[in-house]
Length: 156
Image 1 (tube, rainbow, N blue to C red):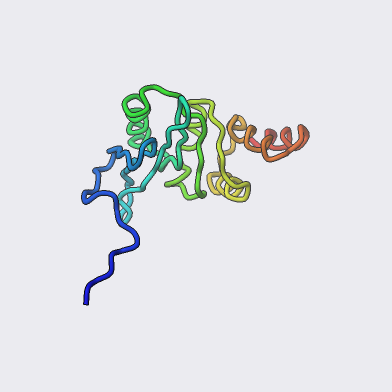
Image 2: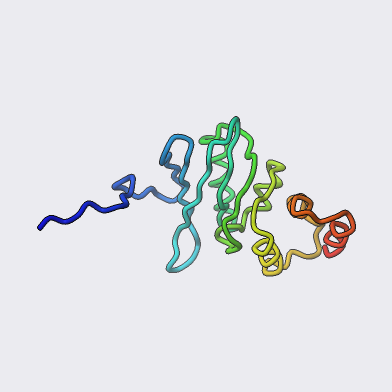
């Protein structure tokens, strides 16, 4: 009796090192990002060719080493092209931790569900600073009026 062919196959026999970028399909890039955690040593992040720029899907944990890796990716793999938007799949800090930094760096919009964004903001407790541009842009796109936006700004 023969073993059936698996329905899903991994595209490579090797696992990239943290910080390495692999093009899994034309225009679809996988970035394996190291994490400073016991039991969870990396996260898989992606960026997609988007016209003359890129869309980033998840950003990694907000720490210096991840910023260094992203700066290398922006320069070498993206060849200095613009990040057009950032998509965060969910609120965990290893997925959304650098979203604000990437959005500010490229003046790119953040795409994330409203509930995830609100909970992320609460958990991050990012008070005492000016309201982030990407947050204001997110809420405007979500339909908040000027009075609601001003209320949002006043909480920082």
